[in-house]
Image (tube, rainbow, N blue to C red; front, side):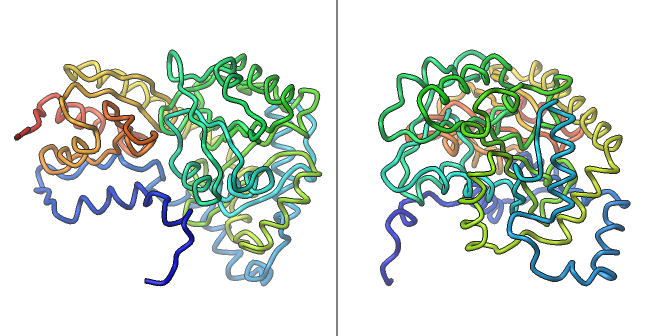
Length: 393
């Protein structure tokens, strides 16, 4: 084999793809089908009204098939700025916004504007594995920050990890993989820390629309120094079921967007036109539909909490938005347990080892319950309650 970039070669393989390969040797009888709680992506298509708008664009708008502005279509940036202003009660202009090929690209673009090989970024653990993968590929050290009660990190713990190589702190709230919703005072403390130490605070709000709290979860966009310190990431994929169209966003200071534009122009030139058209329509016309989707997700969260109470020995550590973080009671590592659950219980979920530094996460698993209704969640819990691993020496 010819030489490979060593940082790429050292990066772990995509966890979701690895988990899917476990299914190749498994079979699931019709009366006991697979319960797949491994991935958060919606399995249903966008609502019909949104599909009709996108279909019409494909047929009747020639510009939908051309390159667009590198930082995103003007109408989507303007509509998102208005939406952000209303939600956060903060001054946001189209000049604060870049549209990206999904929120993963938003993270990569933001991070590329901040750090390079040899730098450090503080990331609470368990971390979102794609964040860790990008940092590894770039030769950036991910400095793990242990979480406290309720899987919420603490700014005072992060302060002790900052060095002259630290460029940013990354937070995800509601969190992937734990579901934890970070309190406003936690986010405020992290903002104050980042600003005082001259580093950036990245807040990934992919699951913001499914937060159980009413209104804005923080006031960071209104804080002095927000343009210089704060980088917010957002995704249209979950809220409008646009995963296949790859539309995300960055909200930050206009000066940083000058640098981010260089990255976006190099890796994609512009985001999918049809996806942007769908996202812009969704922001303007689908608030009631989104509110109903949020209620359904909150109902599933409640069902998840109730169902796990009936599973002896298992602990629901945290739950929210699309995810539950659970501790299992068995004398085996979670990566081995996850593979065993596929064959012996017909359940596919991801082990905690996929979200933690080497050697950690062996007692935990992530359950992505957003695609399971209350009956499906109850069926999963029933299988877990009946499950005893066949452990052999």
